[in-house]
Image (tube, helix red, strand yellow):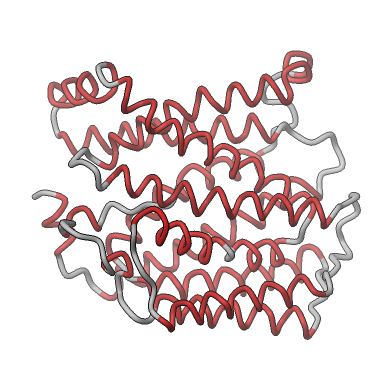
Amino acid sequence: MNEATMANENVSVIFKVYCLAVMTLVAATYTVALRYTRTISTEELYFSTTAVCIAEVIKLVLSLGMLTKETASLIKLKATLQEHIFCSPKELLKLSVPSVVYAVQNNMAFIALSNLDVAVYQVTYQLKIPCTALCTVLMLNRSLNRLQWFSVFMLCGGVTLVQWKPVEATKVQIEQNPVIGFIAIAVAVLCSGFAGVYFEKVLKSSETSLWVRNIQMYLSGIVITLIGVYMTDGERVMEKGFFFGYTPWVFFVVFLASVGGLYTSVVVKYTDNIMKGFSAAAAIVLSMVASVILFGLQITMTFASGAFFVCISIYLYGLPKQDTSRLTWKDTNLEDKQKLISV
C-alpha cells in the first residue's frame, strides 16, 4: 500500500481526535517544559545551542527509521541513500537553506522563552500564520480569499492586544527582557514562514520521498548547528562539556523538539485545517492555564481578549477550505499535497 493510498483512507473520528490531542499536548508541553528549564533552575543553564543540535540528530535517526520502513528492504534503502544523499550534492545544498533558517528559528525559541511567558509566546508565535500566508503568495503564486485576509488582520490585532500591556509571572525570579523576547519571536516567525514554504516548494518540485528530503535537510542541519555551537558557546562547551547543565527535563525538551515536527506530518495527512486550528487554540488555552499554575501568570482582560481574537482568527483562517494549499497551484496531485510538513 503506497503513501497516496494511505492518505485516501477514511480514518476514524477516534483516530483524528487522537491526532488532535497529541498535537495539542506536544505543542503546549514543549513550550511549558522549555520555559521551565530556562527560568526555574537555580543552577547555571545548559547551552541551548547543544540542545538544538541534539534535536537535529534525533530527527535524522527517526527519519532514517521511517525511510527504512517505507522502502521495506535494506537493499532499496541503500540504493535510495546512495542516489539521493551520497550522489546528490546539489540537493543537499538546496536543503541547506531551510536547515539554516530552521536552526535560527529553533535557537530563537530558546531566547524568546527565556524572556517571555509561555502564554505570551504561544499567542505571539501565531504571527507565523500571516507570515506563511505572505510567503505563500510571493513564492508559490497563490491567493487568499477575503475571509482569510480578515482572519490575518484579526490575528495581528489580537497579538497587539497581548503585547499592549505585558503580563507578569510572579514565580519567575530570573531577569527577563521582554523586548529581546519579542524580537526573538519576530525572527522565529519570519524563519518559520519562509522555511515552511521553501520546504514545501522543494517537496513539490519532484517525486522524492518526504523522508529522503528530511534526511537531506537534517544532515545539513547537524553541520549548521554544530557550527552554531562552536561560534556561540565553543569555549564554554570545551571547558564544561557538551551536556553541561542537562537534567531529565532538558532531555524531555529535546525529545519533544525532535518528535513534534515529525508528528505534525501525520496530523497534516489525516486531519484538516479546522482541526489544526482547534489544536493551536487549545494549546494557547493550556499554556495559559499552565502559566497561571506553574509561573504565577497574572491574566489581564487585555491579554485574555487578545488571546481570544487570536484563537478565533486561527479558526477562521482554516474554515474556507480543508486544504488551503489548493488555491491556485497547478499540476499538483493529491500525493504532493500530503507532503506539507512543519519542522
